[in-house]
Every structure is written in C-alpha cells, then in structure tokens.
Image (cartoon, rainbow, N blue to C red; front, side, top):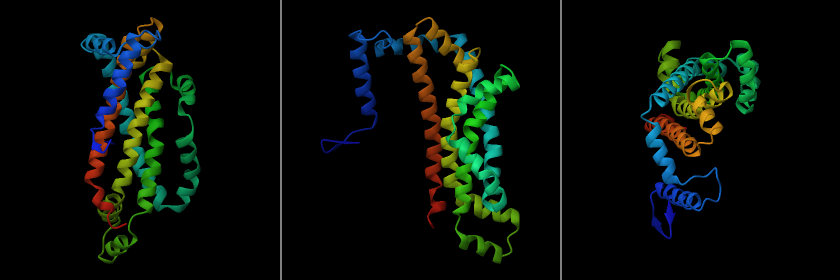
Length: 250
C-alpha cells in the first residue's frame, strides 16, 4: 500500500480500523460495539476454555469433511465437464445456478431430509464449496495449451498420462483458484449451517453470545472465524503462486 509516496504495510490499515473501533467503543456510541481492547481480552479468556475447544473441534471436523468431499467430487466432475461436451452442457447450467444461488436457503431443506446434526453441516460445507471448484476446474482444463495436448498424443502418451502430466498440471492455477474460493465459501457454510442448526460448534457459541448480549465475546469469535478463513485462503494462495509457471505458455 502506497500512502503519501511511501510504502506502508497492508496491516497498517487494520491498525487504523482497530484504533477507530477502540475510540467508538470507549465513547459508548453503540451497545453492540464494545471497545476493541475488551474484545481482545474476551478472546484471550474464551480461547482456553473447554467449551470453545469442543466447539472448534466440531467445526473443524465438519469443515474438513465437507471440503474433502468437495475436492474429491469437484475436481473430477470439472475435468469430465471440460472433456465431455455433452456432460458439460447437461451439468453446466446447474453448476452456474448453484454458484450464484443462496445455498443457505437450502439448509432448512437439508435439516428436513438429513436431520439436525453434524451431517447437515458437512453437506452444507460441501454444497457451498463444490460448485465453484467444478467451475474453475472446467475452465482450467478447457484453457489448457492445445499444443501440449497434441504433443503428448504424438509421443504416445496414454489417457492417464495425458490427464495427470498435461491437463491437470496446465489447469493447476485455475484449480487452486477454485479451491481457494471454495475454502472461503466452506467457512461460510460451517458458520451458516451451525447457526441455523444452533446446537453445535461455533454456531452454538454465536447463538449463546448473541442471546445473552455478550458482545465482547461475540466479536472476539467473529475475529477468530475471519482470521481462520483468511489464514486458510492465504495458505492456498501461497501454493497457487508457487505453481503459476504452469500457465506461462498461455
């Protein structure tokens, strides 16, 4: 970030916002905005508790299972949609609909079909993440360098080698971009699913703090969830930047 002709770390903007937050909180302009120092103190208090640890364990398990399913389904389906024209036409409309649709509206339906529990949250994470992974994988495979494909075929590459050594590697930047977006949407899926169910995980804590008007604890939990989503997204983005050279020929 450039300010007044000088390069300033991007984290400086967060410091500015936190200072403003502290001033607003100390001025007691709103009952729902406590001082930032109080939020940090509440975070330090709740993180070591057994209830927070149990909630995080449930939420991380739901997130990991849902994202694993999304990757196992999303990447192969995206590859098939790119390589099989008929399948791409059949599924393309539905994938685009679900990418733009408010998936949270389906959670009550999932609760009626699957029941109230962790399985519903896992399916919610899966639905939030899988379609953007499919879409980006399909785009990456379609944009793979045709000359590399033809060269591999002329050298006698098998179908498996064509996919694993040419198409997947060429599409890897787009696939990872889809994974990064899927991770962000997956975190939303965990929180929304657990909020609507409101009996387990982080959603239970959000419900508890809001009902009892514990705003310092509530905002501390918000910051923790945001930080987790940012950290996972940046981890995928780091790996994404490391493999960008696969797309250099385009």
